[in-house]
Length: 326
Length: 273
Image (tube, rainbow over all chains, first blue to last red; front, side, top):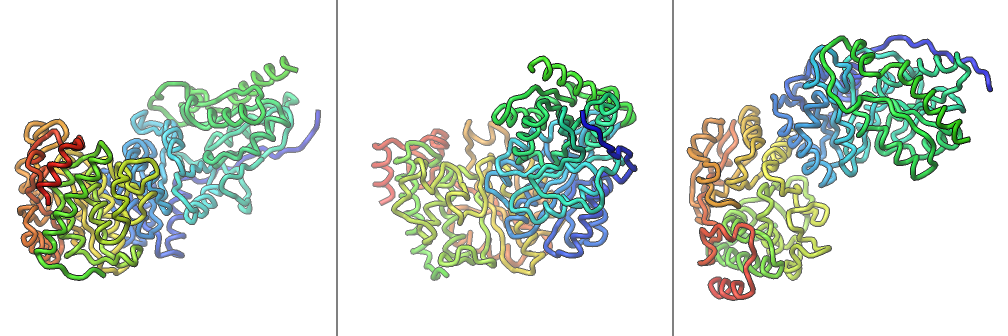
């Protein structure tokens, strides 16, 4: 068993939605070609920073997400870099048919959709406002790139990369402030997973706010002598197949953790790659075939099994299966 | 750029386009002849008289944009684009066949001159608004035209778009409703009546022009009037006849989505000789 000195302490940072809004306005200053559409929710998605500075490039669409997606598709077809934003459950679910026919199918390249308030960590507003199936829906659209930043550093980097990406992009953001997991100098590449903590016993692949929980889980496991590798799969589509294959081959067990319905999100996508590349036991941490409820974000994450303790338990389970096989 | 055509030439073109529609759908054995035939004068007037475009330069940034939101009417659009020189006339009969550029519904991947891929009803007006806004942002004076089906405007997204275009004063946009009074299941008035249709669009803040959608001079006047309207979008409520030009197809719900048989093709082509 190897020893290591990992720094597990995490400082609290901004929410990914605030980091998105701030980055968007910075990009807007550099590039007059960027336009933004929002559906009466700009003060929550944080596109109101952009709206205030560039009112002529901001389009208030009212509470009409389907129309908003279509308009942005038209703007993008004429060469604009078009961002649309709302809560992920509204823009993805209500705009899905438009994302399919007006964006994905004709391959509108300059289109970016940002869904905020994703997952159950929005808290008190309850399930009608919680996007828990957005990854499943957007990953079903051929040609879409799907990004899930874990903290403010990742958000700033990924929004910049998404802006000039060659193809439509979905960025999933969240409501609450989240811990900072990255150094400010961290480099990101779309489609390239990042190993945050090395380890050879088991791999934890996580996204969004579950990445900080995965790091805490690795600390719990290390106290038991289990060295967990922690990987940020910030690009959910296309997946970093090589990072997944390496994790399977080198650690022999994988846990996937996501704030999304467990039977249609990142986990099943990773499992497909594992099955194709290098089958090993897997466990999945996510929302279990249910809708959540009102409550404080932390209370909800605990009640619905989305905290470090649950990831560590999944890691112990998968290790028992791995060891039985040996 | 296309040369200006006389009324007689435009009418002759309409007849040619109608013959193409019959031959294309007949050869395909499927498709939507009725709603293609009702839109012929609208499309011919746009592409051969009203719109600024250049078949030798299809990606010209200042070209006027056209979106066939009622995508099932694409045989008419394909025939008009082919007659204008954008794509081959001799391939029109490959409509709906594997690998054809003339897909069952408009598909930009196969025919890039199309401004949008359509077929899922209700979406074209929103896309057209986006294109009109881009013109405004870029200081370009191109105009955007969107052809809607009457049944199509039962879709809620159309009215989201209608509200938006008026509120944002998108006056470089013209919608045309091909009001042929029939949809797949029967007469529009029996499925989900649209009336009072003029009042609806007016109530949503649009400049409304009601006209006979087969009357080319009336269409020319209406499109010219639309250019003079500032501060609001314009919609043409074009009263048309589904299946126009072929006696047994006119006002016949059967020919919404059924192609003519070889015998019917023969009769229709005689009528359109």
